[in-house]
Length: 512
Ligand code: AHR
Image (cartoon, rainbow, N blue to C red; front, top):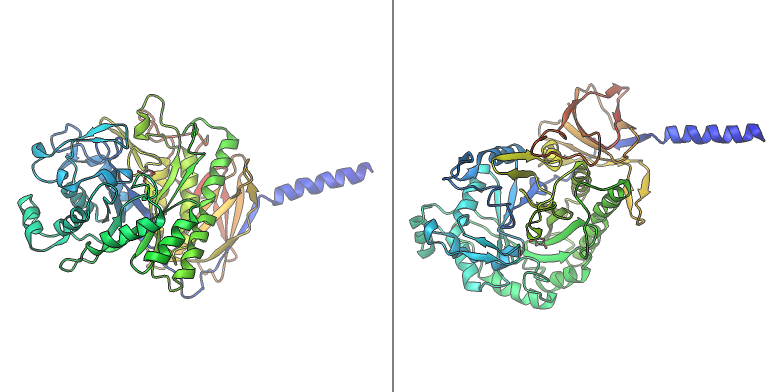
């Protein structure tokens, strides 16, 4: 009896130990691979809190170092990220925004109350020129959200003309304001969250409104607009169904918003003070975006089997309580290694669905929600999420290589699945393979065995993002607490790569 108990115990221990190894099968010889559009790595910048003012823009007169008004530190940080597309001016703010208030001499620009976000007075010193010029400097596509909620068809039509027409009265006005040449504007959103802050509409009503507004958003010169319908929130599948039925042939893309949030009522939890259970619950919620995307895609497939309409997740990311002492309407939250995990797992999911998902925009680029950078006066920190976006930017416009990872799938405290180890793989134009591996376990290191169809001789280099505690973040006095390091804990053997993944880590390998 005693021997049997000991044998059973030994078996348990050995199976626990073998569970530390996961196999990732990488099918790099597959043909007709999808490309991961660079726009999957899009950003979102709203007139909200200090995203624009203090985050991207300080104005040319500021003592904070700037390039024509854009913060120098933030500008170069974003350059490094290779931001492909940036959405502006909202969000909810978009449906309160009147673009004519933000052009012409700064001293003549009217002020307004930003009613959505803390009642802050907006002086309109950052407007159309400031945004589009920033996009040009960054080399990214602008994505403009037009005002449907409180604007007019005429106002929207004239905005498109002002930005893109080579000649005519709006082009003349633009030239008088210092920009003779038209800008190229591709992505144009017909409203935002039309079911909520964008007008509290029903999908049928919005569809009619969309038709009217979209009709007058015209192509000028060589500019070709890509029109985006204001899509569903999370699990509102009926919204997608009605839009596809009624305006599926009028939209280039339809949006979807999904936040990793505990709930909309009551506390959303601290961004920095949380326990292991809350951490895993956050991952469970973040992973929930996958079935949501699949279900919206399935609805779209029934109306649009040829996949002419794209699905754009143009708001996503973590949403926690604001930092104590900050304006609750400004959505300023710190960003820990937990946020980095959410970013990596979400990007891994987006990579899988690029036959329909062509753009995503994390909310938001600076000082708001799951930000890339946080600023305080002249100080700036890069967040753990920033580091993931930088480490992952090798996947932009790369071929998505299918892979299978036999990791254990665990349930969070609310019964939602999340993987222990997750992987994503792509091949860039130079033929190099980039693999990202995520170990979500807080305690245990894992061994990942990467198996290939036919890996020949390979030179491998790696980078890791991890930290002592999952709650670690980059504070203004400790800006490099969570930062990527070179990673060498792997072996190339018999056509395989064996990688030792520390607990709570994100490892990126480049193989050529
Ligand atoms: O990103 C913050 C807000 O969340 C946006 O303004 C709105 O579209 C969404 O509800």
